[in-house]
Amino acid sequence: MNLPEAGELLAKEAARYTAMGWMRGSSGNLSVRLRDEPLRLAVTASGLDKGELTAADVVEIDSSGAAVGPGVPSAEAGLHARIAAVSGARAVVHVHVHAPVLAAERWPDGVQLRDMEMLKGFGRSAHDDLVTIPVVPNSQDMVVLGDSFEAGHRADTPALIVARHGLYVWGADLTQARHRTECLEWLLRFIMAV
Image (cartoon, rainbow, N blue to C red; front, side):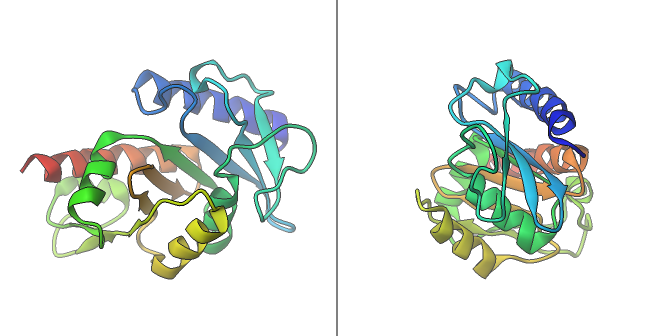
């Protein structure tokens, strides 16, 4: 995938999340893998209204989250790069949804989910499968966040909640990452309501 193609996909997805109220203001960011060696991602640019992105509003980053070429990537680009490098993800979604932040307040050591049909949409079994979504403390230092992510990473759990911040979910492409994000958000709203 090249940068303009990635930009088209990311702008379309960002508009979808904005319409859902999950990327308010200029919050949240998305990325897709451009190539493996060396690792390069396209990530949404910093400080822009995600509902108004164009294909040009993306930045190519390296494995540390630094821009490769013009533009200023999202402040969280380094965490996107770390997630992609460690998990093998081809796409990462970061949204500021309410339920995960509330769940992290209630369960700061990890949010446990089990025996719900919607877990299948998240890539896990609906029954007899304990899924723990890791929760890490927020930090403005992406190396610190990346280290926290990596310390709790499980290959079978493609998500991370950053306390008092938001949700990261990843997948083999933007569609899978979106489906997993939507399913996980539903699951977290459910457990907060019971």
